[in-house]
Length: 557
Image (cartoon, rainbow, N blue to C red; front, top):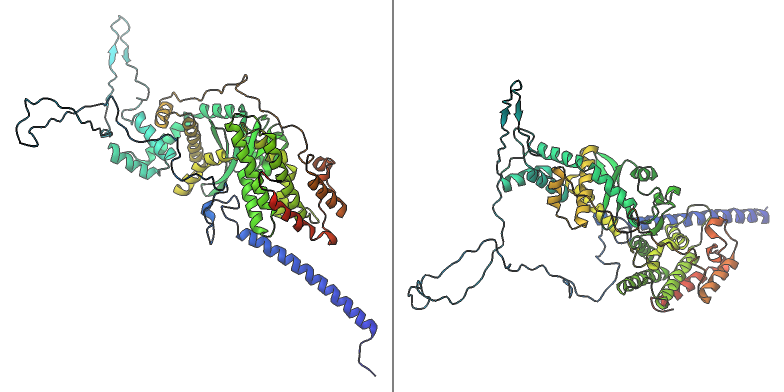
């Protein structure tokens, strides 16, 4: 009797092995995807993500600018104002030095005639010392019959204790700790060495609280003026307060800065801040989902181009064989350059002969990327697919800077610059010791930032605040209330006016496979918003499309 397996047994074995191979293939595909995701996370740095340079791990990326080469030499540019030390016409003091004897024969020069003057000036500060000024409040007894009351002279403002430090020293303490980020103990030593005043660390802390208390109304005024601005920047970052993680939110303009500290990063904190709810101007941010709330829909949103550029760089590094990320970057930077040129030329819009080419290159690159990265089953998508869908679905917000070059900036750098002092303070001191101290520091810092943006001397403004007369920002010129109403983007679909080649690409991808179920609010019946299906016969087509993007550099079709 033969031991050879029967046909049915072989057929069952083949079926079992085929199922096993399919299972292992699926596992391998999942592992490959997971490895790629882990490599992407491991490769994140300050150049391709929103991570700060201090968080760069292992190998730091080579310093490079996302803006590309400008052709200018480093250093001071031609025509830029200089800051050289020069002689003044009216010096504070003039000291004459007369020669006593001739440098040749040695004869005396008492009766010699003047032959000119060589002027040399030394610019210096006088030696700083702490002066003690005594205020004597005299008493007088009334001589009127039947009265005899003793009256004491009123004390000047700030003279309210038997002995106290004056407003100049108080302003200097606040200036050092809040503006120059000097730790409290070192600030006390510095003031003792420079002025001779033996200030204690406890006194400096109390001065910060007093200064913050004097700025409550100014902070409220600044926040109100921000809500009336036509364009604002918002951002957020984490802070260590008393060992716990809290979130610092900032809302700012070119002239105003306001901070808000909250335990939440989400909409609860944004609502408590009170700037975005009901805001009707233009708000620039980094596309955080927090800012997509219904209460903030009255604003015109603009996305930060620097964040998008870093994400495109990350996509190029994750997919080195695809050309669409570089093509998108070239078009994005080309639009930014064109917006700057239009603004410098006094134009309200980018010339059509320049803008239309760049816009077509930009949208063509996005469509090629969507073709190369089709949607998966389910809600969770890859980082690259999420980026591409955001660029497609939020086209008006991404390119708002190009539609209004004189009004909307390309980046959210203003908010990031105003957040940087808080991170600098965190690196120096490690944390804020208490929420009250953190609130005081931030209120003073917002006041200082606003003062600096208006070109006011910080030390003088702090002294005014300490003496009860803080500087207050003026309302901007414009319509009643200070608001200059921003232009609203035209409600046109950005993917309608495309070239014949791009329209053919969309048509092919629509015919290639079934549509995904999408909401009418997102697609709105636009053929370019339909999914780019992946079928067997079309598997090699996206790569060919991406290769065509190599000719999509700015200025070329």
